[in-house]
Structure formats: structure tokens, C-alpha cells
Length: 362
Image (tube, rainbow, N blue to C red; front, top):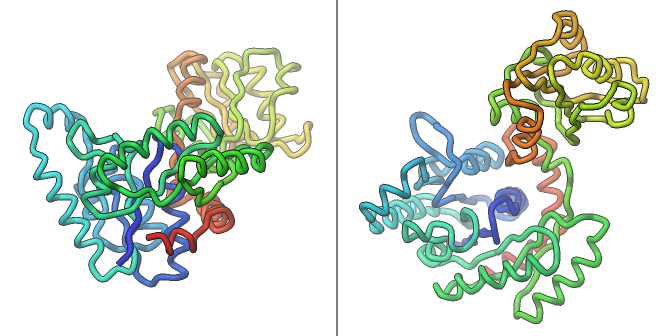
């Protein structure tokens, strides 16, 4: 039975994207594949159990049935770290991980193990990614985001932690590389890491749609109240616009799949955006949504017009700056319902990652 541990140089570099893409492609070669995320920091409640949301994604999308709790044995809930520092019980966590892994791996041809954060995450409770990879006898693929100097520096730093545990680094995948710089970065990163004795297993271009939240995701993360446009909750947000200008100037900024943030009393800008959406005065423009800041409710006629357009109209008590900051800082995670994103991930990994090289190196 083969296994591989997917780690990253830092959070949100694309571990889950890579894991999802690898599993989906490996399912064409292996009948039985298992998945486990030993330690999860973002969890959901499933049948009264705390399970990592990435395990739920993999289970639903890839059809992997390993027992959802075994796929996510340790959920780092609020207060977990403090309790451990006061009463450290390393052997309990170790046993949970090993027993869950054994059940997940039973009768499997391959198990994909997803880490959490960089190599050192989990050290505070004696179970860093490097230690867990050693515990499960796995080689590691390290995922880093696009660039040249910073990714190489971070890769070498993370490698040192895996080396200290005696864990072999199978290779590196560079993710989210800006398309205009793709050829240059691919060449230099491969050359730079080769000097350090490391192989590059893949270089994946940045695809904007994968980082675009839907309106429903924004609402889930922020708690904004929906006033209209329930049918547009799956709209993807590709651009954020702060409406602090006049309606004439706003026409220059409103673009397809944008989210407008403006005070609720700026009915002129709200109506301009809705008219752009309806009348196509700027061509085929589909406004993804509008957030009204300051807790100010517009005139009922504006709300009624928004209902006719099916553009999601939300309201927040926060000021415009805070609303924009919160949305900008959202962590966008792929959901089981994101069919187009999932298809794109599978295609990107198939095209840009050396799948055979990974299988041969395990």
C-alpha cells in the first residue's frame, strides 16, 4: 500500500486543491484510495462529530468512504491548545491518529494524507506535520505558492523540519503562478531547487475562479442579512468595488461579476449598478451582488427593484471600510457544490503535475 503526505509552506497555499486533484486523477489508476487529514483546524459538525471541512469535501466529491471521523481524527477546537499545554497527553493524540489511519488504510491501494499549514504546525501539542508524516511512514510533497525567491526560501526552511524528523521530501509543487510569468518562474524555480537537491513535481498556473467566493460563502462567513436576490446566491465574485463616487463615475468601475459595497443611502449608485445589470448599457454585465454598509436601509422601491433583478442585496451594520476589509480577507475554500471549480482543479493537476513521477517515487 502506497501513501503520500501533502504539506505546504504556509496556510492557503493549496494543499486541499492539490489533494483533491491528485485523488481524482489517481482514481483512474487505483480502485481503492483512502484519505485522512490527521489534524484539522477548520471543522464542521457532522452527526454530532467535529470533522475537518476538507475531509467532508473529499468524501463527497471523490466518493471516498473511510468513515468521516477516521478521515479527521483530531479537530483543533477552541481551547484545545490551552488544555494540552496545561495537561499534555501526547500518547492520546498519537493513538487517535494511528488507529484512524490504520482503519482508513485497510484494503487500500493508496492513501493521501493532508497536513495542516507548514511543517511546524502542531508542534505546540507535539504533533507537527513533520512528526505526523514520520509517524505514518510517509514521504512528503510540499506545496508552495507562486514566485521565485520567497517560495524557495520557505521550501528550504520547511525541508529542514522534515529532515530533522528523518522524513523524505518526494518533491515540490508550485501553485498559483501568475500566467504572464509562468514560463519564467517555472524555469527559475526548477533551476533554483535543483541546486538544493530538490525536484519540482509540478507548476500550476493561477486561475482566478478558484479564489473567487460566491455570495453565499460571503454571507456564511460574515453574517450579512439578505434583503433580496435569493436566486443569485451562487454568483461568483471576481471583483470588489467600493461605491464612494458619483453614479456617472461608477459606470467606469462596474464590471461583470463584481460585488458593490456602498452605504445604504447611496440609492443613486445602487440603482446605477442594478440598471447596468438589467439594461446592458455597458454590454453583458452581471452584477454578482451589493452590500449596503452602515446598517442604512434604502427606500423600499430600491429593494423591490433588486428583487426583480435577482441581484443579491445584503446589508451590514459595519462601515464601508470594515465590510471591504472582511470580504478581502476571506479564506475561500472549495465546497462540494462548486462543480466548475472542482472540474478546473482536476484538469489543472492532470495537465501540470507529474502524476507518474509521484506514483513511482512513493
